[in-house]
Each structure stands twice: as C-alpha cells, then as structure tokens.
Image (cartoon, rainbow over the protein chains, first blue to last red):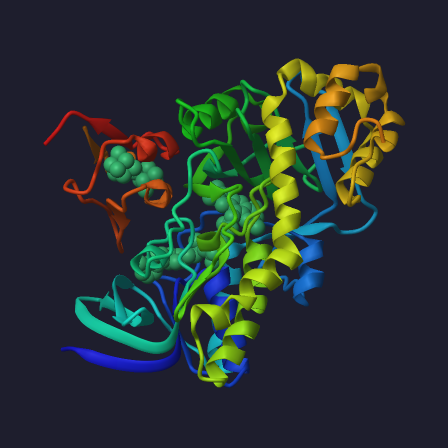
Length: 405
Length: 60
Ligand SMILES: Cc1cc2nc3c(=O)[nH]c(=O)nc-3n(C[C@H](O)[C@H](O)[C@H](O)COP(=O)(O)OP(=O)(O)OC[C@H]3O[C@@H](n4cnc5c(N)ncnc54)[C@H](O)[C@@H]3O)c2cc1C
Ligand code: SF4
Ligand code: SF4
C-alpha cells in the first residue's frame, strides 16, 4: 500500500527537539507529524539524563516527579590526584531525569496539543520540488509511506542524515565531536548522591571527563565523554575507571548506551528552502559539558516562531527562514562559541596544570567565573592562579581577555 | 580500505553516522548499514565509535 499524507510540517526525529517543536507547531494552529524510527519514544536512552535548573526556568518547564527522579544540589569536580573541588548550593540546582519517561511525557503533550507521532518509521529519502523540500519518504513497519508538508524539520540527532538529503552539510568533524559511553549502574557505594561527580585527568578521560549522575542513593549513570579523535575507545577508558573505582566495586550494569556528542562547530546556516535543522542535528550542544536537551528545546522555540510566521505568510524560502539563524546565534550561538574556547583551553592542560587549577580556585570562585560574561585578568589575579604566570597567561589567551587589562 | 561493523559490539548509537564525510553509513530501525560503494576508508567512524565496533579494514 502506498499512502500519502499531507501536513503543514513534517518533523523527522522524536527526541526532545522534535517532540517539543511538534507541540509548539500545534499550539500555533499548524498540523505537524513527528516521524521516528524507534520502536518506542524515549528508548534507547543515549544520555546522562542531567538537566540544570536554568533550563526549567528558561523553558517554563515544571519538574514532574514521574520523570524528574532525583534532585541535584551541585557538583564535585575531582582532580587527577583525587582532590575535590565542591560546588554546593543551598537549593536544588538541577534534576536527574528518567529520560524514557520524560520523552513520553513530551510526546503526550505534543499529541494532546494536536500533533501526530509515528514510531518504527524510518525516513529513507527526500521529496523535493525544485530547490524546495516538500516531504520525506519512509518505510513504516514494512510499508512505503510518503509524508508531505510545507516545511521539513530535521530533528534527527547527531546521526542526522535528513539535512544532507536536502543539501545541508551538517555532518560533524571528529575534532568537534565527543565519543560517549555510559553505564546505568545499580548497587553503587556513593558518599554524596546529592551532587553530580566529575572526574578529570588525561589518563581518566582525555579531553573530557568521567561522570557519576546519581538517580538514587545507590543508583546512577556512570559515563564518559572523550575527544572523538582519540585512538582508544570511550569504552576502554570507562571500563578502566569503573574497574578501579571503589564507588563501583560490586555494582551491576543494568544498561549500556553511548553516542556521539557535538561539542563545537555550531552551524552558521541551519536552513534551506523549506528545511530547518534543530537540536543535535544543528550541533546545538554545550561544548563544555555536552548537555543538549535544554538547548534543543530552547532552539525549537526559536525555530518554530520563525517557521510558523513563514508558513502562514506562504513563504518558506531559505531567505525567509534565515531569521532563525540570526535569532538563535544572538540568543545562544555566540555564547556557545565562547565555551568552545574554554574547551580548547582545557584540551591544553596537563594533569599537573589541572592540579594547579584545582588548588588555585575555591568552589565559590569557580562559580563566579562560570557565571561571569567576561573573565578579566584582574579577576583571575585575585585567585591563587597569580602564582602561576604561565597558566594565567594560557587561561587569558583562551578566555579572550587582554592580559594587560 | 572499507568500514566494517562488528554487530556483537555495536550499541546502535549512531555516532559513526554523524561523522562519515560521504554519507556511507546509516542506522535504520535496527542496524548499521554500510554503503561500501560510497565508503572512502577515511576511518572517522572507527575513531569515534565508543564501543570499538567499527573498524576499517582491507576489503573490496
Ligand atoms: C552519552 C551521552 C550523554 C549525554 N548526557 C546528557 C545530559 O546529561 N544532559 C543533556 O542535556 N544532554 C546530554 N546528552 C546530549 C543529549 O542526549 C542530546 O543533546 C539530545 O538528545 C538532543 O536531542 P535531539 O532531539 O536533537 O536528538 P535525539 O534525542 O538524538 O533525537 C533524534 C531522533 O531522531 C530519530 N531519527 C534519526 N534519524 C531518523 C530517520 N532517518 N528516520 C526516523 N527517525 C530518525 C532518532 O531515532 C532519534 O529518536 C548526552 C549525549 C550522550 C551521547
Ligand atoms: S571509513 Fe570514512 S567513509 Fe567509510 S564509512 Fe567510515 S567514516 Fe564513512
Ligand atoms: S559508533 Fe560504533 S557502536 Fe555506535 S552505531 Fe556506529 S558502529 Fe555501532
């Protein structure tokens, strides 16, 4: 059977970006369908499942105990030699999600608003009309189906192929990618499940870190992200760490997952005639910690606003859609680009440098820097880093501050 | 030199697909599909693969 179905918007990918966008389109009074190849929305999970409070506020999202399963009160950063830098807040700073249930909730909310969702439906080809995207061909549980629309949204994640089908080059470079591997573990011996724990070191996780994101008092996501061009695998480093960590001794692995994480190379252009990219497919991820759920949903808001206007005006040309590029870059893109610089500074550090950094800052100082728009040499000079001129110079070089300021 | 996926190790994460410069890889409903005609043997997929499932070997 060859079915044909017509919508205002055809969204490929039912992750946070696609599901959030679908609800927004429906709320704009537009018909939208989300197509995902997964058998079940939310499964498999490829994620540490941490979401900071900033995002709940920015997105006007209320943590629901069904999926916001554990409160976080800050972070403990561990240096290669085991020194701890603790950032602890008096109030909840974020949540660990049961993402499986979170995405189901996003899907329910999209459906309730009037959007449609189909699963186990794999998009194989583009439908074009001249230079314009007009829909996609898919196989839906053995049947060939065509979905047509005024606009196609590629929300198909790191593995994005939809953009390329329509001529948008959004494949990622190895240099700007992290390779992630993760275990969900039960029976852990954690001292402090109120904090997320991050472990640094060039032997621990080159160009990245090992994380423990607690989902309960003895239950957590234990994962790793490393630079994708590393000759060894993320699994190699994670296994090495897990096998030597007292926290993991005797614990069981109840889930294995992983994935590529875009940690740079945000796209200057995310649109073409009748096509828009959003979420991981547009590399909208924090270059520092690899978090992308919040950014994906926020960018969806920006994207839908531009798209809805264009559809209603009957002009979905690249020129009409390009307002999404400017709005998103001003809102978030340039900020993320600065974070790429910090990532690049971090890449230069030896284990010894990391120890110096760990000793030079207190938790509150680190926080102050994390939240400041511009890190000045005057501010850095108030820390113990002043005793290490070469590191101070290196830091200033990457933090874009003038050393003489 | 062509890419090869060891399905015993593969966790179907799609990382390799995202970095293939020529679009030789796809991850469909259940598996990685390699278009050997397109593959240029660059090795990017093997480097990013977190599970060590992807290798690039001499082949047709
Ligand atoms: C190991 C790891 C840990 C992470 N930890 C965190 C974290 O703690 N916090 C955080 O915020 N972020 C984290 N991230 C990043 C986060 O998972 C992503 O940024 C987020 O999922 C992006 O959402 P998305 O909707 O853009 O893409 P995705 O969630 O990847 O969704 C894309 C969807 O598109 C579907 N799809 C793709 N191609 C097709 C096709 N051809 N046909 C049909 N369907 C298709 C896929 O099945 C998928 O469901 C982590 C990532 C990894 C890999
Ligand atoms: S070796 Fe290079 S071209 Fe071949 S599949 Fe892997 S990434 Fe693609
Ligand atoms: S990156 Fe490795 S584990 Fe992930 S889908 Fe590709 S071959 Fe499989």
